[in-house]
Image 1 (tube, rainbow, N blue to C red):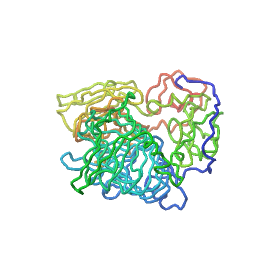
Image 2: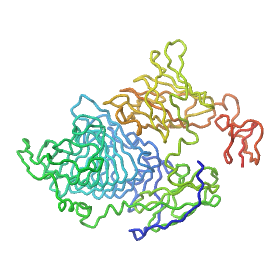
Image 3: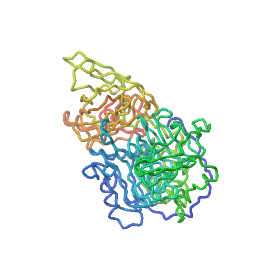
Image 4: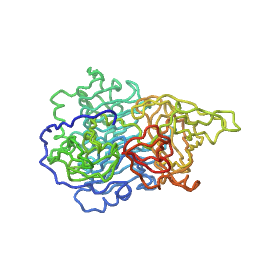
Length: 637
């Protein structure tokens, strides 16, 4: 286990701000209890005071599963907790065909009391570069007292749309990406320690508030502004309607707006656009001396004149309680997570220290969801002695706290800080330009076929199948799960084919890389004959290296022998992470299935060769794993 074996140390945890919660399990785990569509239907028909939904890491096509004719999903129930396993691992997306602020939301929340954590919302709608507007909303938020923690929103124009002026919303640790007015609308909205990311485009505008007499409007506290833009090329916001307000407090500006800071009004002048204590990325004060203080608007004839720099007393009035909690609502308390547990194993029994503030506990094995329980123990049924188990505690809203240490059923302790980059899963292999070689397909004069040369994987290859004149080339390096790989350069619009050995079926494929263009983004537009997919490679040549785009496609059923895929719009550069399993392709051809052989337990290793269940020769078998040896299925103790 990566060489990390330590002694279990029990630590003391500070007293919680809660008075204890009622123990209960989650109501619905997507992929275990049913589909996302079934989870949504169950929540909307439930009479429970609060309904809890968990989404394990994966890609969820909201648009196709629960969207309307333009792939907009409307969630009409109040008091629901939507909890993901991880912000980057749970991606919920849609692909509307018609742009518009009111018709494109990946998720439209009509009611209040929503708690969402560790989820990415992504709008893959088509961007027409010649159109005057490309309004593609990720989250249309119409409820009161909604909380978003560690939620990422990926789009361009109008990414986050807050629609009701009198409603209150709290965001903490979120990421909002976009280009034009990508935070827009009304309400009292408190952004606490969020990342505002300006995507690559000329004249980005972060906010377009549309107020209606709110005392505070949009409040950004200790947020960070960054992006694929240059200093001075964007503004903090522009007034949309009804004399809006927006303030930025204690902002870290890794990218700085124009000297004026704020743009021209659209329909009216702002009531207040102001800053306090803005710093650059090194902690130096940003020069606010040229910030805009006077506005005129020809549409309604209004004017405005105010000081765009708050003093310390004025800034101190923008507290969470004043902005959204005048009636006692404390969203920052609701968003407080339960601390990491200390996990131990005794044979197949897992145990950890209980916490009165934990509603329940989630058990994971090698990063995959296993179960949730209200107890502080869990008996593993079977299990691999080398697999790593972890536990996370859920607070009263369902939000999962940090992972415990890891343990194996053999008693090893794995420190939490070694769990972040576990590498590819056991059944996943990474194909990149440097672990193979190119060749010419028969009858062509271009090296349009790439074949893997890794030991045990020589039967895998991919080729540009629909174009004889396009070779497989290499692109720049990207980082995936802590390792650096050289990418392939695909051919824009040309269909490719990936071929696997007999007896192997693809379960899931992940493309990791970037779009080889500074402005437009490549799209996975077809895979295995499914031309309804529309998944965007959302990193381009300005920001791909350490944080590349990642597209994961899970096949509805395992695919044997080969499958096609096509990237369109612009050239994609990628590596391939393929998750496969043994299939009956060999069984149909040879009449035998190695996995159907009765299992033999052995204390000693034999002299002849061992193979894993995928037919790959293994030089050194590992205790606790199953192998094919001398025609038998064997596990070494």
